[in-house]
Length: 415
Image (cartoon, rainbow, N blue to C red; front, side, top):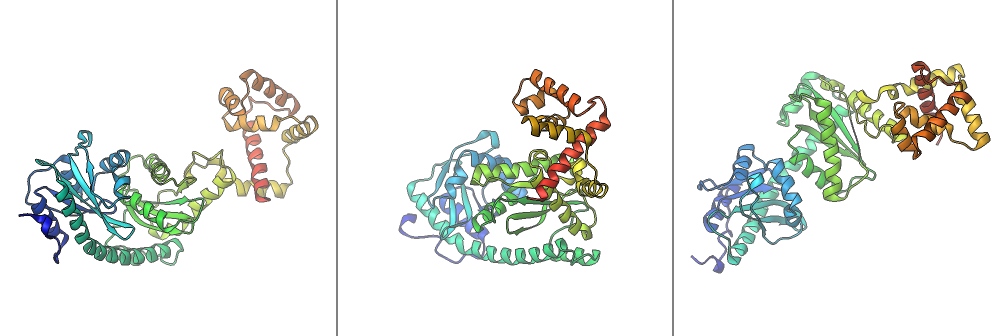
């Protein structure tokens, strides 16, 4: 039959599964239909010809993360997000992907999903490319219906999440009931993550965020919301052996992908401790915001710290500052060094700060200060003499470190 003279997809299909079967029948190839976040919506069933990537997608109900990452690297997904024309995808044995043709399903300027056709024993012709575009047009209405239902569920999810974040919902039975009504299985342990963006999050960036969160297969994300320039996530900590290590990897990978794929930079990620009581979400949220506050004041010192658990002495700065103020205390050694720096236009205080921040490592401190190790050793001798500092005394070093950071902290509060 010559399909170029008509449109076999110009009819009302009861489901996307029925459409997938029709596309497979017309093109004589296995077919899958996905949403914009690569979750499997439908696939043709009457065909045993396939490849490992398609099998994994059907079993997991979504495209494996390694396949998505490779398709980004190869430029396939960026191409699908910029054209309405079918795209030929080459064979990638390393991820179990055979030859394919893919087309995006569009609603005006928004991609709703994708149709993938595996070229097992044939290569699609230009005529069949045209039919595939008609199939994508036919799929649009079904995907719009799914999107409407999804948006309503997301509104309910976000309302529930904000009640948890603000402490307006603390009863265990009520919280559990809300989770189940949203068809979300609450984890027995969780962490709260906050990503702070430089600017308010636009609608387009929100779409990009949704894509990354949905295609992530490292953590189960139970709830998420956006508040001005902050993305807030509630993630499961169940069955994670090295939780903080895994969370570190997750937040860094998210920041990397936002930069690499979408050009969105200057994102600061933080996360809370592990909690077991959902009535404590408000506390977990404020804990995360406190980490953000400290990171803003000490960006260099805390650039590799993302959680309250790793803040160390910075957890207690507010208390220590009040203690110093109430006692009207001034570190005698630092006073002598400040006076010397002002009189001689030197930088002994900066040298001491960097040296102690680098855990008294000569080579690391010299590199940070951009001086030779011998020069640093000479400066440290001068610091010891002028400030009456004994670098062999761990108590004095700790006290100097704390008072240096408190002074910086205090100065930041006055800005």
